[in-house]
Image 1 (spheres, helix red, strand yellow):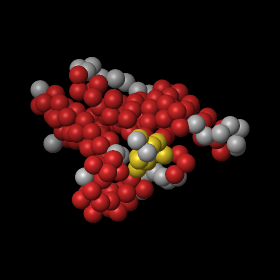
Image 2 (tube, one colour; image 1 turned 120 degrees about the vertical axis):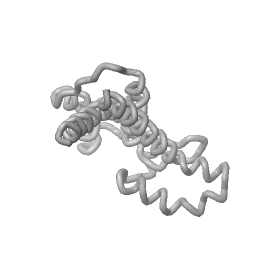
Image 3 (tube, helix red, strand yellow; image 1 turned 30 degrees about the vertical axis):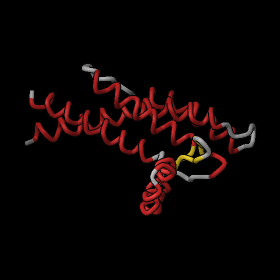
Image 4 (tube, helix red, strand yellow; image 1 turned 90 degrees about the vertical axis):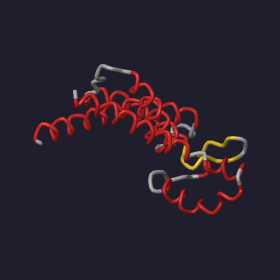
Amino acid sequence: MILAFRKSYLKIFLLLLFVFWSIGIFYNTFIYLFPNLIFFHPFINKCYSLVCHQHNEKLINIFGLPLLVCARCSGIYFGLLISAVVNVFIRNKVLITNKILLLFSLPLIIDVIRNYLKIYDYSIIVAFISGLFFGAVLFFYFYNIILEFLQKYLTEK
């Protein structure tokens, strides 16, 4: 009973974390709407630059304003966010094995390799979609790891 109660808190916490992180990706849009936010731009941009290369040609532009991460990272983060939302409403555990994680990461890996070898030009849409699939599965993979850790920690207490 206590674990189920804590599980719901964990679900809400992770959802809020990914909502907050995903909103931050649109920071340049917020600066356009609220110019006083420019003060925080160096800090926010540095936070996102730690997890993404931020190459200008790979950024998604919305209304002419670039997101703070590339298309692939945007896909990963929105995949994580979508899975976090779905996870709040799911009662059963979604089991993601290493094989399933590898299967869903293959489109991303193939896209990166084909792009690196210059087999075809970079596609923002392909990068976003491959990141989206990977992020969606990655959320449940890490969620299960966190749950197992908490179960072990709570039973030892």
